[in-house]
Amino acid sequence: MRSATPYPGSAAADPVDILLVDDQPARLLAYRAILAPLAENLIEANSGAEALKHLMERECALILLDVNMPGMDGFETASLIHQHPRFEKTPIIFVTAINVSDMDRMRGYKLGAVDYVTVPIIPEILRSKVVVLSELYRKRRDLQLANQNLEAANEALRVEKRRELESLNESLRVANNQLAARNVELQSQIADRITAELRLLEVNRRKDEFLATLAHELRNPLASLGNALNALQLAERTEPPHEAMQRQLRLLVRLIDDLLDIARINRGKLTVQHAPTTLRAVLDAAIETAMPLLLADRHTLDVRVPDDEIALYVDHDRLSQVFSNLLNNAAKYSPAETPIELVARSDAEGIDVAVIDSGIGLDAGQADKIFEAFAQVDTSIERSRGGLGIGLTLVKRIVELHDGRVDVHSEGLGRGSRFTVHLPLVPVPREAAAAPPAVVETGTNASCRALIVDDNHDSADTMAMMLKMLGHETHCVYDPRLTAGAVEMFEPDVVFLDIGMPGLSGYDVARTLRAAAGGDQLTLVAVTGWGHDEDRRRTAAAGFDHHLVKPAEMATISAICNRLTPRPHDQA
Ligand code: ADP
Image 1: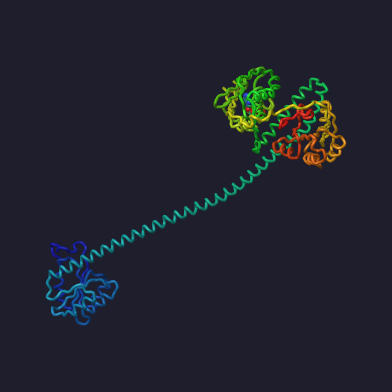
Image 2: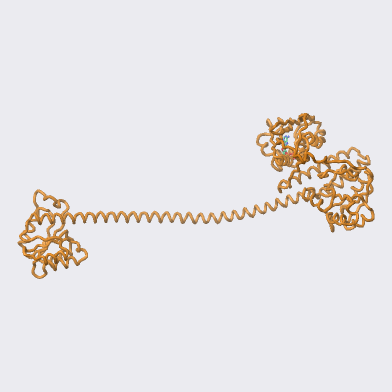
């Protein structure tokens, strides 16, 4: 039975089960009457056994338990209920007679009773105890429910996270596998590239070696030709073709020198030897070299150089090569009879030398590339003008070795070019400035006895022919092993020795001659196709006095025979 107005703290919408256990129906009725206003579910049991049976079916918020029941009394029932794990915390209010002893109360509390009510029951007291315990139960149940929800949400989150993590892990595994496969592919590509690069380097090295050997091998026939031409000149048999042959020979020698230089640049072996000189001397040497080409096309050369002597501390020959290359190009890439200018100016910053022509010019794209090795703008046309596409590479490298730079400006195709070399002013070191002049003539021009040792017959014979025309006595040896005997027999003043000979090298021959009695009196001249600094060091170490590169200039050979004290580096 429910009252119309809810009792304060009553269940309202959320009633709990309350088990009423008593063997007396009248008492059960009384309990129901007292508790009805609370609007909870009241369940009745007439004995302890029936109470246990109820509990097996549904949980209760609390139990109102009569202590004195026949058979299983309240304490025994409470003990059995609380032994069950599901109900060990279910609160029990014992209903006792007024005369219950303290001992019994103690027993009840030990069995987990929360409270006692005594008969006769005061309704308000019972209701308020039941309200508190019911509310406590509801709270606990809500809390349990919230906990369960939380647990379920947590579990769902855990599952979701695990799923996400697994999917992430799977993606990672796939990505990792792909990465590993790509890595293997890359490694193999890198290995291929390294192999290809090594092969290229090897090919490049061989190419440079080949260029050097080729240049060296070409020098032998050129030497013979040069000697023969010199001999003809000395015999004053210079019919018209002679001059053309001299010119072409010079061109060939220049091409070979350029080839060798490019091989040196590629191997990082191009070096410069700084020595005191002047800007005028450098430019004069360049003009002299370029003059044949300038004259051939009847160009006019306008030279504007400061009047003051500008002292330089540079590699004279190499720097002359820079300007002769630029002048040669100006002549090559301009129509015949057009003017070419060579303009130099200096200030505190340094020196600028410009070579200006009014020739075929360059467009912007070409200007960037022409300093690269073998770069030619239009190979079909440029090739017809001669050249290997090396000259400007050499210019750039040599200028850089002097801490300078070179740039080009052209207004466009057909509008001429201006190449400008910028060089820093380097003070001439005091000790270098004080050095004695490089060439001192002490000679007598007297005839000398020259022994020529070369396994190349033509080379030896033409050299002998030229020396004879110069007024010297000569003797040729073609087998280096016969040199010592020839020296003993011929008693030469000077021995011209080829270096690369079969059986015995020029170095070995030189060492043997130097070691022999009177060997220190001999002038030993190496005549070789190899002209690098390293080669010069080797000949000097073997005891040579001079190192000439084939084809040697007649003037240099003549100077040696006439006892000129030559320049330290006789000629390149
Ligand atoms: P080469 O003259 O042997 O071809 P260079 O290295 O001296 O080689 O020059 C490279 C290229 O630069 C030439 O082939 C030519 O196309 C261009 N070039 C050089 N000098 C001039 C110039 N004065 N005017 C126009 N083009 C030039």
